[in-house]
Image (cartoon, rainbow over all chains, first blue to last red; front, side, top):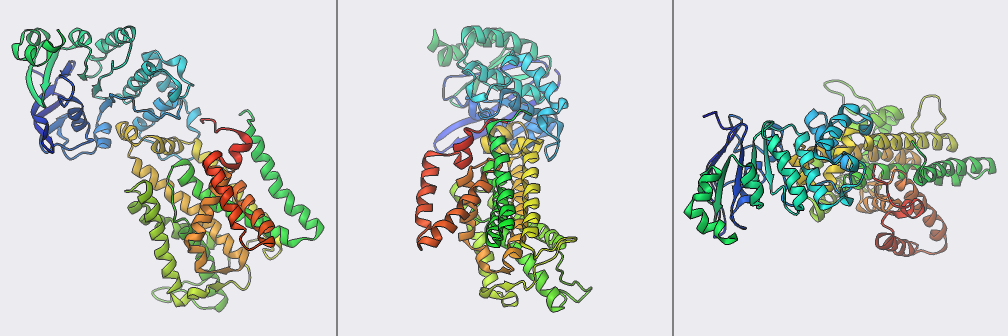
Amino acid sequence: MPEAILSLSNVTKQFGALLASDNVSLDLLPGEIHALIGPNGAGKSTLIKQIAGEIKPDSGDIRFAGRDINDLSAVERSRMGLARTFQVSSLMPEFSVLQNVVLAQQSVSGKIFRFFKPVLSDASLLEPAMAQLERVGLADRAHMRAADISHGERRQLEMAVALALKPRAFLLDEPMAGMGPEGSKRLTGFLDGLRAEAPILLVEHDMDAVFALADRISVLVYGRVIATGTVDDIRGNEDVKRAYLGEEA
Amino acid sequence: MSMNRETILNIVLAALLIAVPVIAQIMGEPFIITLATKVAILGMAGVGLNIALGYGGLVSFGHAAFFGIGGYAAGILASHALNYEPIMEAPFEINGTTQMIVIWIVALIASALVALLIGAITLRTSGVYFIMITLAFAQMIYYFAISWPAYGGEDGLSIYVRNSFPGLNTLDPISFFALCAAMLGIAIAFSAVLIRSRFGLALHGARQNSQRMMAIGIAPFRVRLVAFVISAMITAWAGALYADLNRFVSPSMLSWHMSGEIMVFVILGGVGRLFGPVAGAALYILLEHLLGGMFEYWQLPLGILLLVVVLFARGGLIGLLAGERKHA
């Protein structure tokens, strides 16, 4: 088995009486889409936040790219190549769609503290930013304000920003949320190709997408991973059916 | 670049600021030249604050600290030069100076260091806490100036002869105005370039969404700190000019009233608008001059005006005349 790019071991996080992450261990292998599913309130987003470095686990270890990242900030983890998208779109509302991607592109270039050259005539930023917008199908919205585009388009923009970071792993927190069936289908096709670029830890409620995409699935219930396996393993798992899939059937 | 309404308005404002003292010179009205000089200098202090407040969303209620540091740089260096007393004798001698260029460099360095220290602490907070802590730091420096007898304490420090600038008679009002207007022009041009730069984009981003900044790997704190320091330096530069205009510097330049005044220029004129602070300072000085002559409580109508601007015209004077801000 190849070495995992991202691995969590015994990650635990408690908020008061609520055990949001209960001894969670999972890993993300090169080239795979690892889906994280579970009912609402199971602690999926909390887990993503701990991996991204926005909140600190009470105990447990997180390793990324062969390194212990427990003490790294969210900024440092992002710079190491861990790109996340947000469940509720988190963008720069006053910026144009293009500016949102240019800012990410600028971060990757490592040159933020440049005070004189106009940024919006800098082809070394604009061209790759535009290329990312074309990849997600948002090029024709490049000059609209991010606040003025549709909900689905904002989801696409989140993806474009993550792509611009050229990450070594993606953390996608419900990228399909609120997208129409048409949009979900397109994004499913897109993510299918993306795994070759960098592995994806995918939190998603859309089961059609999960079953179509996932190489492996982990099921989180009350902060605990109750099962990890292939699509077929999970479909046939009695615990999972009882705890989760049963509710939808 | 196409000319939008704001650009045209800015050109008109700049032309007015230059035309009024020129006409006053021809008519033999030196007092009006002094008023225009005051507008240029206070506008420049506002241009400094606008970088933190307008572009960075950092509501600093302590910019008088930097304005005063600039003022004291001018006062202290000039007083040593005029009294032939070195500032320091050992291990090597440092003398005062009456050269504005040297004074400005000292003002810029001193304010940058103080802003770095204040910013490093205050920028760990936000919102009301940031407002109060910047205020607290400025008040500390204010009380320090009051209780430090070497440079006049509460009474302040006179600059008997206005400091000099190569090739210019700074005592001539219109020449001094030209110098101040040129420095204001540099400050405005610099902020215009700054907000369009990579750093400007990051600063705009840090104001809008910290969470997103961190997710793309940019620490908003560092961006804000650099903006705060640049902002303080421009305000300090204006402070050095202000001391020379009045030929006097006192702790009042460091007081919270001054911080409030600089903030009023920015808000009256238009937060985050290039010429906003100049428009705001001009309106403020005009009101002070016209109403202040008529009755003592001229700040009452100013307060009402400020209230109207904050409640109904968020873009200030520039917003009222040129419309909503276009996204860059």
